[in-house]
Amino acid sequence: MISLDKAPIGVPLILCHIMDEGLSIRVQRLGLYDGAKLMRLNESVTIGPVKVNGPQGDVILSGGLAAKVVIHLDDDRRLPLLDCVHGDSGHVEGITGHGTVESVLADLGFKENDRITFLRRIPPMLYKFSIEGKKTTQMNEGLASKVIGDTENGPVQLCSAGVGEAFEVTHILAGETAKETLAALNVHIGSKLQLSNVSTGQVLSFSNFKSIVCMTYDGLRLYFQEKDAKQLLVKEAEESATPQS
Image 1 (cartoon, helix red, strand yellow):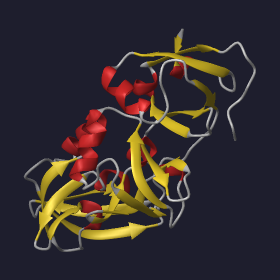
Image 2 (cartoon, one colour):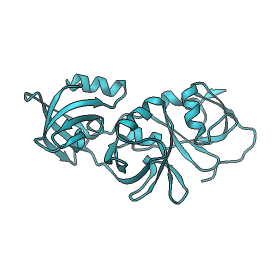
Image 3 (spheres, rainbow, N blue to C red):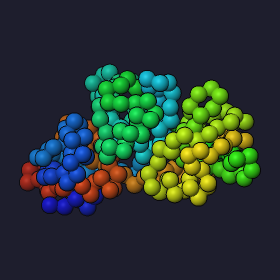
Image 4 (tube, rainbow, N blue to C red):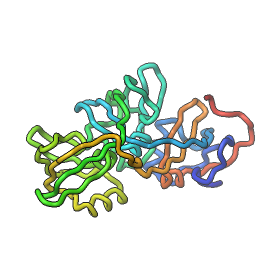
């Protein structure tokens, strides 16, 4: 047995064991269980933020988060949010990540079985802002989507705040790497920020989310973060059947 991140590409595989219990419970809802057949795909995916509409209105999800959320569309297809197009609607079917992903979704107003509509992908953008009315700095749209704060109009993500609007950070929805980046910018819970400019068309890289892509034998394509793919132990299948395209 080998972990999914080390599995050969384009070869029929059998899922033997999922070492993390929490991850196992979550992916079983998506049809991944011991004995399930799958295949790792070789695909270069641009992981960028997306805008969706949910129970609490419009929100922006980072590319890494969008890759982990699977929705069951009204036409009975199942897709990761990252693969959806404008107008796709359905309900949250499950996630391909740990419990922290559920916590982040909850902070954004989503939970399993909630209705969700894909609106659009977010182009590269640059958010310039001041901290405590003094230092001016900037971040890309991926990081800005992970910072939530209070404004006079209620809680919003930094990427949805208005220019010149007072913004006090209340939540940071990020993994350790992103948190370290935000900490280096002196952005933390309690920070008082104010956007001064939002510009488009900048040449910026999206979130550094290295995805391991696989497809189940019923045609569902799934994206795993590398650390999660290491928890899935697989072996090569003896038969030569391939997943549906």
